[in-house]
Length: 115
Length: 112
Image (cartoon, rainbow over all chains, first blue to last red):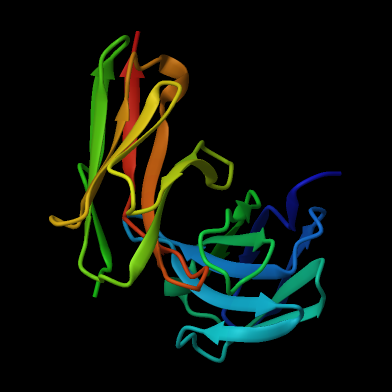
């Protein structure tokens, strides 16, 4: 399988549940990203990892917890979410995170609905 | 505060026509301006990108026009086709970083 894959593609969870989103990139990249895409709002960068170290955390609530065990895998652990967290969560990767001007390759996203 | 402002929110163009999407920014530290294309059920994919040292970049039917003094850039799609129907996002990132700041998107519909 090539590119950036994400699982699951759709997720429905209650506010007291704990779930995880998974992202895998098959491009040999060193940087990975989590974005939130809500209707009529810009894509919001949530987290950036470079060589498995978190380099950016854009004031994201602690109910979102990222994990990057290696440069190919990225997780987003979810717990006690709110209905306003319902959105499309996109994972992306690039060769590196700090050089600027690099193409980011996006996965298809996980559509999350919090009830 | 929205770093990149995009308009229009939606656009309907006849097949063969020109589609124009505009973006504006304030942060003079931005030095990389990509456009991404997103089809339903897919993630965004890079379409074309420009650096501020040139005023125009063309790839096939897609052209970016860049006005550094006005801090504006736009995407022109020539000879628009129904297969171009998608949501288009402009973005910008600052020097030495890959953090992308996206516009709100433009949903383009090309009617046959």
